[in-house]
Amino acid sequence: MVKEDPAAFNSELENLREKWAELVEQCLVLQPALKRDLRDSWPMKLSETQLTVGFDPEFPGVMAEVKMLDHGGLHKLFSNLLGRSIGIEYQVMKESVKWSHHAPEVGEKVPEKDKPFSMETAGNNPEEWVKNTSIRNVLEVFHGDIIDIQR
Image (cartoon, rainbow, N blue to C red; front, side, top):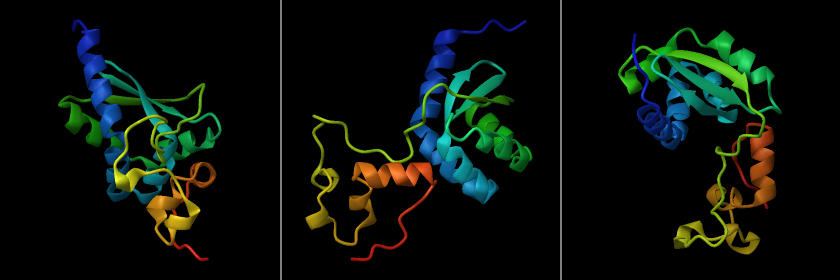
């Protein structure tokens, strides 16, 4: 019987959370729709043999789609990353996921390129428009990306 070390798993879970955006991006290679569906997910729990991935309660149907689209690619991705065979469990979270379109935290010292949104200076730069809270919320709700900006 394997004794589980909660501190070690918490460290691995934090590492997964830090890399989550990159891991979701890698899903584009596995199945393009997985990348879109995992935008509303977040790693919740990790044990020796199991990763629990939570999904935004606003989009519970996405969880079923991920189960249908994944043919072992996510198991392989997470098993390779963690260095052991890992099962994946899915559940609906109690709160919304907000990681996919981040804005700088209030009071945080930000580099020039990360200054708050300004319509006057945003121009045709999608990175600037994502700083707008309303735009970011629409992108999250519709799993969208800014493709073109027209004045």
